[in-house]
Length: 276
Image (cartoon, rainbow, N blue to C red):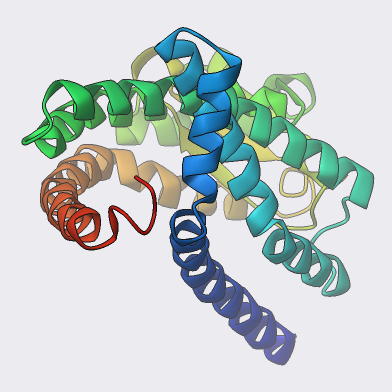
């Protein structure tokens, strides 16, 4: 089992690194082959209003990018199934991929349109505007994420079948001061997709909740579930979320600045070649 765990970890690391490098190469190819310019021209011929052109362009871009990364996702799911971690069939997996793409279009396309407007509005300092716009989006993402989880997994009140576990979890909640009432403790039907074990806390403020996978509740002793939950609660007790948000915000300031500088160099070098 240890050897298989090491092998699976190595496979996942290789896929992550290769997928990231391919993502950068794919973006370069979109520009270098003038495919991005052709896509922009197509949207302009099809629609009159600029904001509609932008929404269609970014929606198409997200679809194309998802299709480009699909082989890595397929390989990852294949190994998840062959190593006995995933029990989800290919049709269910494809359905989840389609849902994720739909969400990325529904949320991502308007956000990218907003970013594009900022670039046009402040062409010299747009990176600063993007950074400012990103900050509330980071907080909103944490707040909204629990509300989106039921799209992909089934949930039910934890007290329905595990009242004793709820009582034990309430003790940890009281000890840690995480302020999560029993009606925000849920059982997730993870066994429909995976053999993995997990229990976690997600959300922010009114959306903060406890989630225990059904692969964990009833299959391992309650004290082990409490151990996992205690670890996850520690992220809240030690204020990791605001610290991560602050660290991310600080880092993104320099990332956006650096990317804007690089983009300026690329435009000056390849403006004609890429038909920008």
